[in-house]
Length: 223
Image (cartoon, rainbow, N blue to C red; front, side, top):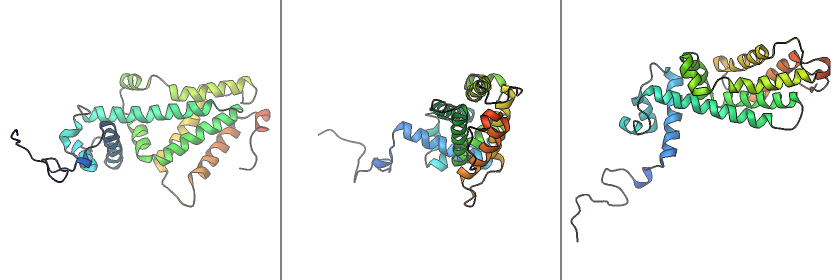
């Protein structure tokens, strides 16, 4: 029988870890991204270290370098994930049946709920996005595809006579997004003010503020 130099007993490899501690690469990567979001949120990107992120996951710092080369790479991956999730989410809502207002309601509602339920990720995204070099931002996010989903519906609503024609559509989209994005600066989970109540408040003010008389007739009056 060949001689072995390392012995495995009781289902444990020779390094002392349980076989069950080994996780698929994709699952581990998601744990690293989640930990990075939490540490960046709590300490700020500049002050955070890869060692703190590794400690949060429960792995050696060197293991992180299997996935990335620098802390900046980790931030890029995190920002891209949040952006892509957001774009996919609102595009799905924009394809729903209904009026322009039904679609804008669904899009803004999902955006607000995502921000409130993923506070660490969205805070890091919105805060660090402002610090990115414009060329780097363009390479990561392919222009303004998130805003443009809202912009297209605003233009459609104007063409249908539902949204005030005198409003600049791009400025309107930017204003509405800027207002909802401000949530990350002040929102904290509040049992007395659930997320759907906050979404109702925002959406009511935004949609009624841009609607024509014809458009107002399509909006609910019970909130």
